[in-house]
Length: 107
Length: 121
Image (cartoon, rainbow over all chains, first blue to last red; front, side):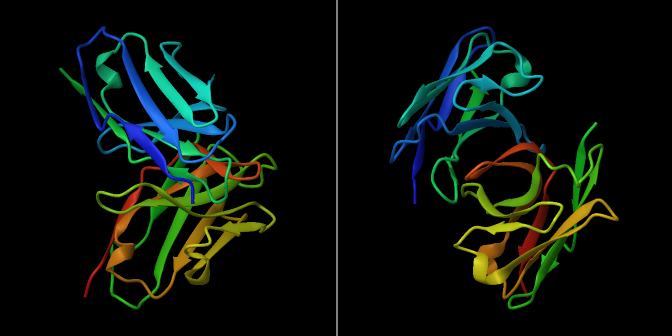
């Protein structure tokens, strides 16, 4: 099974600052990686698929990059509504696996 | 606006069968573009895909759960359901239903709110 490792576990960022989250896979995924955002008490929301394509309605301050085994999600200027947990998910190798999440908290 | 609402008992006894239903509104479950699936998250653990189904009943299961899982669809009610048999405490989790994009391996473009199911006597 493909292991997805996210880092850091917690990221403390001030509003307006840039945040970069990492996701590493134990085998190459090509570009078959998705990012999700989850706020407390809410369902996860798809942000990025195909490693770098924003889902419908996702603001341009969210961007994804990477291929193979190393991926990142960047939030260019953190807004108050962006403080949440972010998960990556690989969908290249059956049956698909998620990372353990990175919590983005207010500094 | 697409909405998925999971429902079912919040408490299930060990060895019994967990049953959940997801009601879909704002989209037709007969869409040929999508599958519909279940994902769970045990407390403090990663998200885990369980199973997905399309309108015609084509199903895919996570091999780790396949022997205990059944997913079904009711197009007349625009809903789909999950049954997980022989549950143990390890099946305690928040269960989410989600619209599924299925190429070779699924990912999920819209999620419902999730429902906590606790397995306990």
